Length: 565
Image (cartoon, one colour):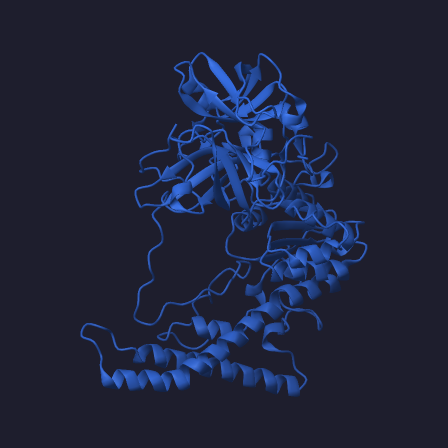
């Protein structure tokens, strides 16, 4: 049974009973809809516009195998037309219809809140030549725009959502739950094919009256919501807000660890503000339009996180269950949630506040390691820069960085060893006209390997002498035992990242060969700025330019053929 007590939501072997075909006054198919209650159908506002004054809802999956046609009208004020901001980002485009005659309750379905990244989904629409309806398969790419809409990539070119699919239910292939509604599809000038949906949380924000028909836990724990007796929402630590917004916009950092100390009202208010603005359901029309009013770079993307939990006084097992539920991993409840998470390929953007105030912080850290290894992104907030904080920095940031460097050394050894000999043999036999000799790349590989090995030798000598390793070098201005960067939050913004413990090996790898040693590309950067290793293009080559603004995944091209109605 579906969440609403009706038909299984995403069974591909039959027409879903909740799927509605909508015709306009001219008798033509205007779009699709979702039967949420016996007398209410969810659809797109532009479907209502296209259908003109008269709407007819047809139930192609009726349990009696007929196709009942029921007149419908817009349900009061439950109509939010699509609008676009100055950047062309769309918002809204949802409407609720009221049927003149109710349908059986067993034909209804409820929307389900579910984290979306990478999910395989299906939608049931009514494109040209398929008046009876057809399934389209897609994969969730990610959020786009400030309204919290979600971009879908069709499994095959022919499965791009097309006219007749607007308003169709989007069902998760794993769980069978309906998690959103199709808005439009687009073939842009570059040949890219995208479909777009409004997830359950965004629909709930536009049409609050639908919340009784939306199930599943919300993305933000109640204890993280602003309260009347909490810090003033007018307080803002702007640098901290910019760092939070950058991570929530996916700045390339997988793990971010911060400290928000008890009594720091400004930082606490800034954190709550970021969590609220990044939630699709909690954002307001004011927050969507406020980007030009707030300090630059402090407004995160809608859907920047999939789950935000308060770990204070909670066990790791309870948090794991919360994560598994948000991921839709409830099919085998007899298995421990950690095992379900480990076996799943699902990922999510997770915020955990008060990690060191959990009942069992060490098992919680084990859970976070599993999530990081599986590709999830983590924003972790500690209350103090103590042992738990330092252990998390080491296990989630420093060790993975060292492992990446070790893999780099191994690869450079391959490049400067047997592969290099094979390269020279091939170059000696023929060098095609017009191709740049590759010796410069080989020289760069040798230099990088030598830098890494020299740094390793220096670290080894310090270890044998009882001194600290470079990436845990003590700050001469701090008392013994205090790690530079690891608990620097007391002096700056409560933020910790790999750049603060980045050792000379990393700096040398990024150093311009024309600069003296120690004067790396990042030498003048703000020490609080995040750092993530990025592949450097081969010497003598230019990096490939990225997509033009508005033309890449995650944004609708503004100079394309335009979305269909």
